[in-house]
Length: 339
Image 1 (cartoon, one colour):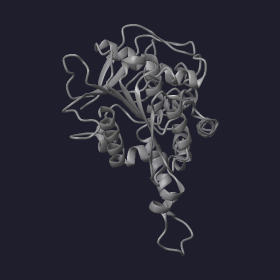
Image 2: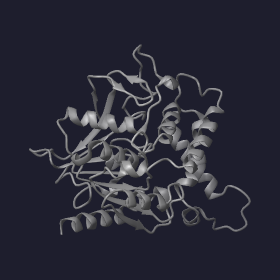
Image 3: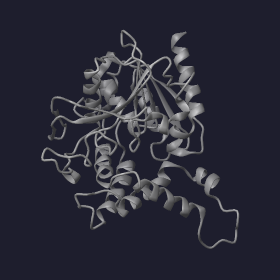
Image 4: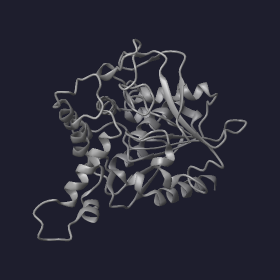
């Protein structure tokens, strides 16, 4: 289904002090909302994805899968700051000019609040399940804390209770690359070559040593150059700048660094302890970006949470790749809750 657009009628006051007047929200829906609005599944997408879930999570979408439009009303709301339709550095400010780097700083909590406020415009107050991986898992946690008993269940994948120093260091390295471009401050933003470099720098952290051995090893032991791994990184960098915006990416990385579920809530354990949603935390064995220890900690601090580990060589991006294993894990967990 195509992306739809809506505009909130009131300002969104941001956690860091800024204000977005009548923010635009991009979203996609699948299936039908039942009469008592009890069949809502909210998909919280990853950092650079959009609201069109089948485009990037096809493996868990469809008949007898986690996201089944024949049974549930599935909605995905585009994250704040994304170039795919929701208010962001790419959109216009009150004067009709592109925000660019003047877009106000925001947090993961602000994205969660935008989700909640938009859902309320649809008359949706309760959520059957939230599911999200990586950045989407961070947004899901915030929604689960903010809505409390109004969230029945959630599935968190390859995410943490707060952004770790390790990941913040990677993000700052990417921002240094982007700021190195003399045209970075240009209001037009767009397809900066520094954006290509920043994305390329991060890619190995999304995969793993084993996955590169599987996918990028050379058949010719006598090669001196033109390696598969080099070609792969160049290709992915070019692919990214053809679809993304440098100012959006820059601001999104800043927002990710703000993620700390315990901020202004008495600490992480206190905040997670308030989550009443039945929770499944899924870790991926080879994830070097957000290692499984982080998902184990979530499961320890969220009351009644279950931890499941998926063995895979594909690193952090396994939540987009290992869809058969994810389907099995979530469906088995859902059935066990009913028994």
